[in-house]
Amino acid sequence: MSSVRHIALRCRDMEKSRDFFANAFGWELLKLRTSGQALDMTDGEINITLIQQPENCQRPTLEEGNEYIHFGVIVEDVDACRQRLDTWGAEFLTESIKHTGEAAPNPQAQQSFKVLDPDGNVIDVTGNKTEWLGVRMR
Image 1: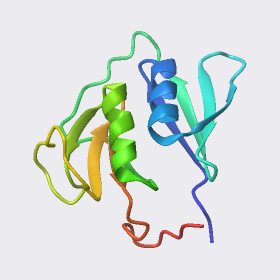
Image 2: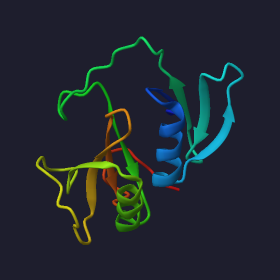
Image 3: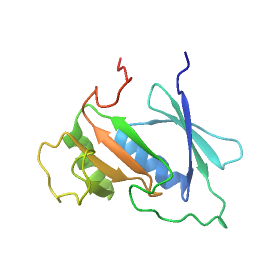
Image 4: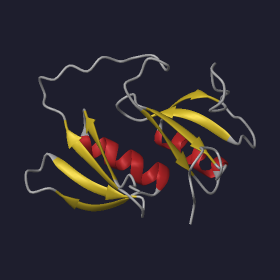
């Protein structure tokens, strides 16, 4: 058996992405790589490396459903996470990870939502610890 323990994301602005993930989800900065072009964070289970994309790299913005990658995060308190993201200035996509459509400006007691990171990656955010098949929470 194997386990996913590392993911790397290319970022237009690595420091802005670091701030986003630290504030939104509480991911901890582990270290800046010696090149200064990457840094390591953790959620306590996996290593997340943020890599500064080259200045001359053009990255298209894709609509949800056509994105190259999206990932999910399970949080303890969905409302508190949404408030942190709102304060940060994040763009919300939907009120539920199960539906498409626009997110309401002030939804109450939602169980999940979709949000964009600073690079336009879609993140499914839920409080449901059994949302995805095969996931075991400690």
